[in-house]
Image (cartoon, rainbow over all chains, first blue to last red; front, side, top):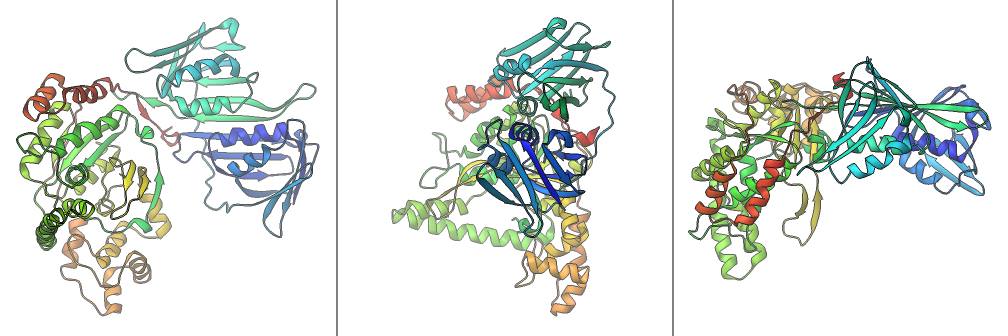
Length: 251
Length: 337
């Protein structure tokens, strides 16, 4: 059984981060809250998103799995404004999720979860970490899109850089010093190259004032952690973790 | 020519961009036939230079490959060698069909029926040895490595894959999986809009990856058994059993484990069964370590524009894509870490 009530904003954010990578996902429901772990179809990126019970106005649940059409779910939530309340209820009989927003009731059939993999999280030792607001790098990512399809992230002990190099000497370079960063801890220099599309999708799934905690290595996947369901009074009631595999120059 | 294994296999549509930095071995005969079939004028005649020499294959290599190279793919072309003796019947059939199509093409032009003319013309497509040599010369100039397979090109593609010399194979022929290609791509050089034969309709074609491992899991078969399914349906090396398509073939092998049992049940016989199997399982190949070089712009221009009268501006533009193609790094997956 599952029945919960939550502010639209918090649910949209949770589903939106997942939707940046996959169209379908398995929602794990427990007495403590919701969790989605998913890997994109080409196994380049992975997400783990959690929303704890306290993010909800009311929450009653027994352990269960639910196959969600994330695209459809996102679509349903677009009708809700930020402060609307969304009610979710599992309809066991018809195997569907019933979403109530104001006077609107939307029932969504659930998907078969048997084909949805439980992604294995690689164990990584990433030497550099940097914390930066989404807004600080958003412009750089936007500008890069017309230049190339890949972006290099690098840290030194004094700065965090995003460099995108394209054809015919086109390039975008964003360099952030310690005063523009929340935190920087990079004893050794670290650089890895990533698909711009994936990286931008992940970053842009979060609001511009959200802080990204980025862990970086040399030619290693990047790990990005951020808070979800942030409330000025009570703090974060959830979190998201992204992993993105790098591109590596062969020659 | 392409056994219909499609419905049995797990495929995933991809964007060409996903293959950036990946080394892809392309079945050369397959792709040259594709160019010669599709790069034609409205009435079906091939592109030629003022001397009447065919240029469709060169045009295909320069322009269509440039779109892949531009996205960071590293191409390696594999040409067929001597066909196995068991393929003789099929090749003879194809030869006769082409002669018939040639006559029908000429008749259609006579009658002013361009639509039929084009279709018939495409069926006459012949890959001649001078075209192969011209293609190889152009590949050399463009810095794209190529290799002559001792026999079937698809088998050579599979061996390059299994030896880790390339990351993907590319062909339209599903036979490639029978030769053991673990990761292969269809529609790589075709993507975009494609006309349906005999209709004024276009469909959007995008490249797809065939995942052999996943397919085997889903079908609960191993490679030997998939080969047996194919043999029942008919391959390049045998005509197959009447009325056995992918679904029935799969069911038979799932039930009986191998072709012998299925044939006994059907009361049929397939000649040279073991020989056909070993053509797929133990096909000859050569060791080859592909090396990618920088394109020779001057010589390419001279070859295509001076020798074959290509438009210089268009060739220069295409060549820019080869020159600008910087290594963008190969996309790894999380499973690699």
